[in-house]
Length: 393
Image (cartoon, rainbow, N blue to C red; front, side, top):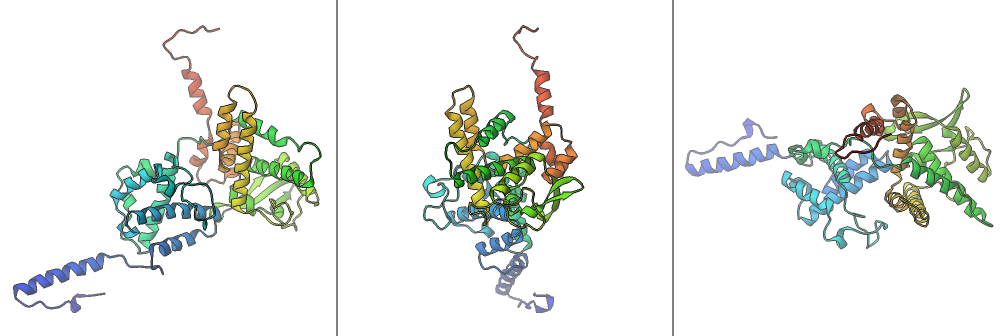
C-alpha cells in the first residue's frame, strides 16, 4: 500500500503536472478497487466460493446455484462479467427472466446437466419466482462485495427494490384447497388392482407414505430424504419426529396417529417391526430394494409424476370443475404439500404459535401468511354490497 513517503516528487514543468495528474487518477483507482479476499480466479470460482457457504443444506445450495448460474450465463451472453453488472442491467435481466429468448437456447425439459439438451429454464419465471431470484442474487452480490470480488451491489441502487425484493407475499396461494386434497388422498388410498406384484404394492405403500409424511408433518424435501427411522421417538406417551432443518436448526414435531399408522404399514412391508426403533438408522424413504435412500431429485420427480398421474385420473372423471382441479395438480410442485399442510392446520384451528413450531419459522409473520380466515370473513361481509337487488331469505 502506498503512503505519502512513497509518492514521487513532481518536477516543476507543465508536463510533469500532467504526469502527476495521471498518477493521482491511477492511485485513486487503485485505492477504490476491490481487494480480493477469496481464492478465486473467475466469476464462476467466486460464485462457487459463495455456494460453499450453503453446502450444509442441499436444497438451498441447488436453488442458489440455479439462480446464480442463470445470471452468469445471461451476463456471458451480454459480454459482461460480475464486476461490470450495473443498475441499468437489472431491468433487462428481470425482463429476460420473464421471457428468456431465444427460447430454444434457454428453455427446455428437465435433463441431466451434462446432457447437450440441458437448458437453464423449464419455462419463463412468474412474478413471484423473479422476485425470489432477485432476492437470492442480492445476497450473492452482498457477499461478493464483502469478499472483495466486486466493488458494489447494484441491487442497492434499485429505487423500487422494496417492492421487487420483498419476498413476503400477503398470503400463501400455492397450496391445494381442501376439496382437491381430499380427492387426491382418496385416490392415493386406492390399492393396486387385481393380482398386483410385490413391487406394485411397495410402490403404492411408498407413495402413500410420501404424501402423508409431507401433509402431516410439513417437512421440506431435503428433510424428507434425510429422515431416518430413529428420528421418530417415543417420549412420555407421545411420538415425536426429530429433525435438523433449514439453517441447521434442531426441532421436534408431534407425530399424528395417522402418520404413525402409515409408517408402521411401510415398515411392515419392509419386514421390520411396525414401530420405529431407536437403533434403526435406516432411511425412512428408500428405493424399492428396501435399502438405499432416495435423493432430493428422485423424491421431487416422484411427487411431480404423481401429481401428473392424478391430474390425468381427475380429467377422466366427468364433473363440474374437474378440469380446473386437474390443471392445479399439473402446476403443483412438491413444496405445495408443505404449504397445504400448514394452511389446513391453520384452518383446523391450530394456534399460530404451534403452527410456527411445526413449520419451524423464525418469524411469526412468516407463518401468519397461512391464515386465510380473515380474507374469508372479509369476502362474507362484502358479499351483500352490490348494485343489483337480490332476493334474500
